[in-house]
View (cartoon, rainbow, N blue to C red):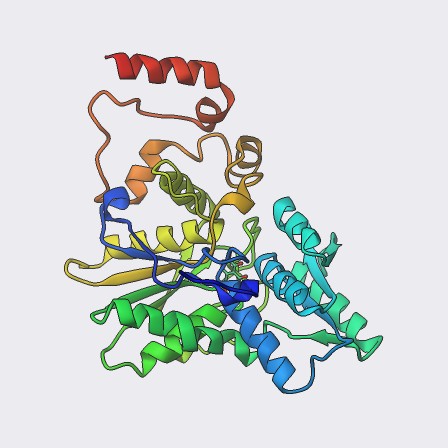
Length: 361
Ligand SMILES: Cc1ncc(COP(=O)(O)O)c(C=O)c1O
């Protein structure tokens, strides 16, 4: 029975979902959302705060400041509350409302950037704001997740060894890339492991992290509008890029089987399934990392109007999902061919009647 006295002391590191029954291809999904911060970012936050305290940079009277798309902000809010530091999170208008409310509930202040920098995008504008704040007084402490080695070291020390313990025959690891802390920590660890592991980075289309053209990205967590300073591509074997519409489809496909994950998990799973479909993966042991759970995305990824407006009404067509994940379970005989978002969300009475008729027959 784990008994804790500070919230950061608990993290479930040994939970995996077997995705074969859902997607028809063997992939184990490591769930990083089961801690009090609700995401993988707890590890980076705890490591960076601990290191800053040991270095004497962070001390009583300090004010923590960080730029975050949300999850690191929540993790730092939790740790700051537990340790008694004030915390200001600088985010932008793509941050989920629930994430912002969570930070505020934990006692943090949230500053929202509404205008992107013409050259550096929203991230550039966020970083400019943080820099200006830090220049205004030395009690402000910016851990800077984009350059802080504690970000990747956390995963080198915890996430990667936890996977290695459970999967001694690991062949391929799929990791989503934001700051690339998770990716680099795992890639460095498995780069010196006793057997070769293929590390596949998963990025979103529109991110420039690994090169490529910048584009609209509405799902927070993965992707960067600058090249990630922590990234060392010599440790990464391959990069796959995922369209946000495919991210959405993967999220909803998981949700229809009772697994409500966050957007970046949809990206990683979609990228991994496409990779597996393109390779002779029979007999390979493969793992992907799910950074968080889905409750923070109820007003975006799991909300009909948001989906329609951004990705069109057909984004959740089942036929599409089956085509994109070759090898997945075929549609049952007699099952409806297409269910649009509107059917699923906006007509509960019809939906209930259909469901009752099906149960009677
Ligand atoms: C939901 C989610 N997924 C993925 C990531 C990417 O993790 P990393 O910054 O370690 O690359 C983040 C980072 O904030 C995140 O919040």
